[in-house]
Amino acid sequence: MQEARRLQALPPYLFRRIEEKIERATREGREVISLAIGDPDRPTPAHIVEAMVKEVHDPVNHTYPTSIGLVAFREAVAAWYRRRGVEIEPQGEVVTLIGSKEGLAHIPFCYLDPGDVALLTDPGYPVYRSCTILAGGEPYFLPLAPERGFLPDFSAVPSEVARKAKLLFLNYPNNPTAAVASVDFFHEAVAFARTYDLLICHDAAYIDITYDGYRAPSFLEVPGAKEVAIEFGSLSKPYNMTGWRLGWVAGNGDAVSVLGRLKSNLDSGCFQAVQKAAGVAALLGPQDCVREVCRLYQQRRDLVVEALNGMGWKLEKPRATFYIWAPVPRGYTSAEFAEMLFDRALVIVTPGEEYGQAGRGFFRLSLTVDTE
Ligand code: PLP
Image (cartoon, rainbow, N blue to C red):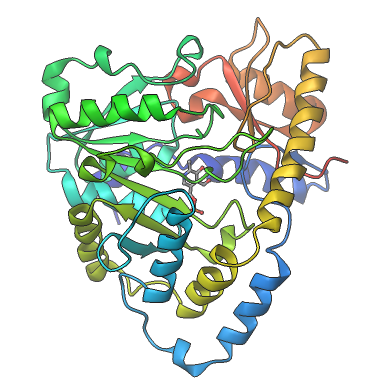
């Protein structure tokens, strides 16, 4: 059976290709060190697992959840924002997601008609591009250059493109570049969105993974942000919960409810036991576990950056995320460099162009692997 054209238009999913390489080498009995995938290597903190065990035994949680999510979880998200000085209304400005990826993947279906443009950063998390294409929209890429601290230049977007655009995806702290953005930059983005009537989709998956005392701002901290923006949050990285599939969208009430409406036609929500365990135990419980996770990655970051700098790189230590984004040595393309590392050392890194054209000449290395 011929698959639909919309699927043929997609590039192969990045991690699938890497996984195939790992599977092949592992089948051959070779030990591979994968620094390619950003998936925490430590377990979910015990108090969250224990809360889950309790909730899983409660038959109240065994029925269909609501598609917009449990009030208790949405209230926990509002409390998380209140700690950052942002007021969010749990009843109309938050929807539970089955991982933030689920919401990021579905938002283009809420707003893009054929011919509508989504402004995406390049390099960027591949889901923004693939789901813009699946929804029938057209991606327009805003390059992220090291000279600009990997922040997009809104003044470089032609006004005829900006007028056709309905969505702008931003992601700080950023995957894959590990760049951070200031509140001033978010102000600039809000002004740009107002001029062109855009919805900003800010992906805050790494907001809690920060180092050296740095605190990453929420996009919703900017006055007026809620008029033009929604933010996607995730339990995956700060609480080592990638497998649990839990996240949220918060901010502009209209956009949040449009996404909730789409979801009510697609899925039946997130297992209530997960929402309660994560909502109550993770977001409202002690946050030492998040500090511990950051301390661990900071140690690994120092080790890797110092080792690379010892070999001739000139990297600054990133202040957030668990990625190192580095230029490949002269004489290699990103793909050639990644292949050389694999062939000679069975080490897997991700070639930069897997995240977009502007990633050419870079590679990404993930710190989610034991120091040994
Ligand atoms: N956004 C970015 C930038 C990511 O790197 C990831 C996962 O790696 C996600 C979103 C998805 O996270 P979640 O587990 O919440 O779906």
